[in-house]
Length: 333
Image 1 (cartoon, rainbow, N blue to C red):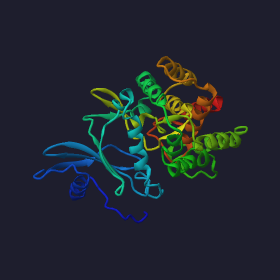
Image 2 (cartoon, rainbow, N blue to C red; image 1 turned 90 degrees about the horizontal axis):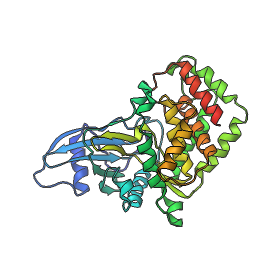
Image 3 (cartoon, rainbow, N blue to C red; image 1 turned 180 degrees about the vertical axis):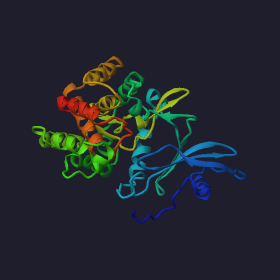
Image 4 (tube, rainbow, N blue to C red; image 1 turned 120 degrees about the vertical axis):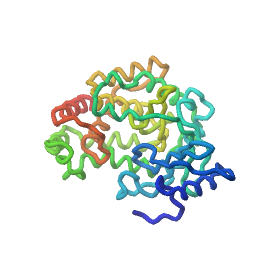
């Protein structure tokens, strides 16, 4: 792990949590920490649910590494990208009301305090059940349509997001899946997956397509994007679907967010019609004009990344369903 020059929080160190709350101006005299716990299985950041005698909040801190994979270095500036995203959406209730409210932030500690949405779970169970009917496509695309409609200044389009984080994600989406031998021990995940990886890497013009789409991903674009719009970034709450974790945000093509959504429809049991269904729902919600071919292409990249890359999903599917997912990706690409 990389050395850190700011205090770290941890769910098993209440003193660190109390200190963070004091720095953020959220602590009152006489307040007592009642409980702290890890708030979900986050990939990127340390996320702590805090209950005191006065309040319940979520503390989120970025470190110079990926929380789930400490061996992977990651830019700490992603916390600023997240707070900038919340600033940009703050005047648009149709977007902001579907996300937790930021209560305070401290960029020196790369720390954010936000509203605790109460009892909730993400949609990660869909990877095991593969019940595509449970995928909240209409709610998700309606939120994306509102997000992509937010006007951005030229300065915002250039500055929103964390470019270094996008470069890291570019490696994991557009480079690592094509690397042979595989970076990940694929057969330990699913018997026969390494052979499937060899087949995928043999697709015609694959490298050129990945390079072309990767360049588009790194360029500044028109729309404010979530950047990581998949079931792990959605919460089931008593009030309905809520969206979290926009640290991968950037200004780019709306087709990227839609492509990620379409890919995860397939990974959760959908078929080759999933991209068309996502696009139709987005248009029905008033979404901007999109290029269906580009949506499918980004979706294909995401399917390949999730099958062959480091950021594995809790898929319980055997090799035959994974081959079927890859076949859809090949068709779309």
